[in-house]
Length: 167
Image (cartoon, rainbow, N blue to C red; front, side, top):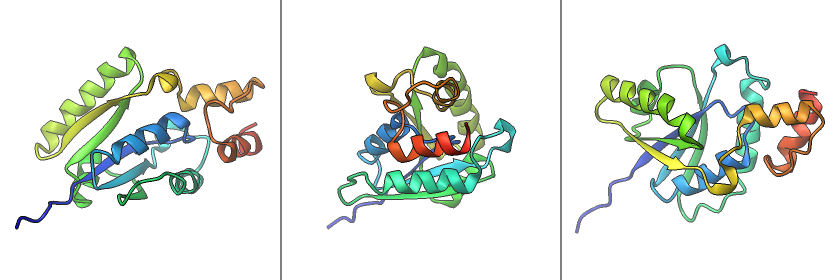
């Protein structure tokens, strides 16, 4: 009898704020790995609209609503090199979402760099579902600032937080 090896993966991002596109990738990533670590980057260089604790709280709230069928999802923060964090978490896979061709060049560079830093960690790309291909946290915040309806892009709890804390 052989024992099944547990496979852990990391889905990193700033998640400023979490969108339905992010949640779609999280749901689909659980089909690939047994344990998914949603890794929230501190990433102060991007000047996030929400502080790290708020981004983690919103993600935990939304992830708790996902049907994961016996899989495990953890939401953790990191402020190191992604490959070092993945190694520490014993994750062999980094999962990245691609929305459009414009994402590919940057993601391709990152995947290549990460592979040079740690060859034992693979990068897997998931294409955004068609209904989420043009969703980005940056655009959601801009739509909200200009008074637009963001209900198609973020969960209600996140929309309320955006209106309360950013506007």
